[in-house]
Image (cartoon, rainbow, N blue to C red; front, side, top):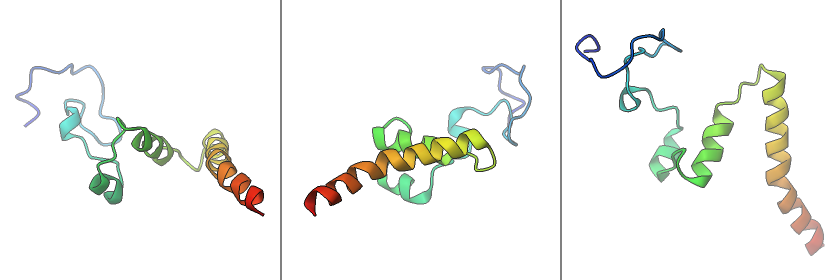
Length: 86
């Protein structure tokens, strides 16, 4: 299947188990089933945030910090509204 293709560059090695000759349509879709069903992709605003957050690795300290920043960023307006109503 990949050996017949001549329209891609063969310079790079396989990355994360994906053959280097695979185009975007042939690569596995990392989106959750719910996001796929709703039509969210990285090309929509909500889908881009979901795609970014799903690619964070909990083993890396920088990614954990970004996850906390995202959590605070999205929770702050709801908490502020709750305090304003009380």
